[in-house]
Amino acid sequence: MSKAFTKETDQDEDELEAGPLPLPPGSKNYITPGGHQRLKNELTYLLNKERPAVTVAVSWAAKNGDRSENADYQYGKKRLREIDRRLRFLTGRLDIAEEISPAAPREDDAAERVFFGATVTYANAEGFEKTITIVGIDELDLKRGHITWISPLARALMKAREGDTVVLRAPGGTEELEIIEIKYCAIEVEPFVPQAPIALNVVEADKSGAQ
Image 1 (tube, rainbow, N blue to C red):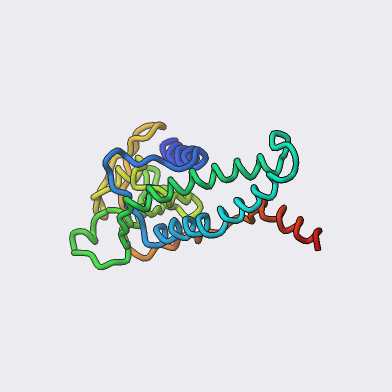
Image 2: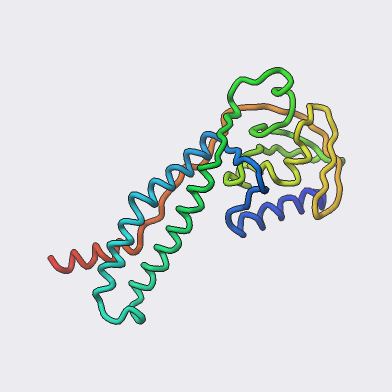
């Protein structure tokens, strides 16, 4: 595998570890239907399920001794801050979201070029082929080959046609890539799966002990 291919992957992994990516100033938040629904499901869960549960747990913990030395209380307050920060983030992302369905019919020219939602197979100079799908900034999923539309690779591929050669300029160097295939189809996104509310377990345990 070439250095440019490796560096592109390394950069995506670094972005994944760094947390949510910032949108370019003034840009729209392009997102697939599946990604849009995932963000909405997370927002609904945090707002209607986890935050109320953690609030109850914090109230319970506050009654148990010195708050400065109360691990349950400190954990609960920390979790509430995290939830509120995530809620602000999700609300901001959804407020500017522009949902685009890759499976929607496209005019001939648009269907033949690389745009948001395209699944693209390309090859480097050594003939190594790779397939990626261009998705929203909050839909990065390296296991499925989903890259964000703001990544260097996606920007290099944009508007290209099958048979075109594009130039990828990445931290690892410059490389020419040949477009082998472009297609548009529904993109499967992993659903939002909530974590078990640890703070709520403390309250339930207390209730059980009181019975």
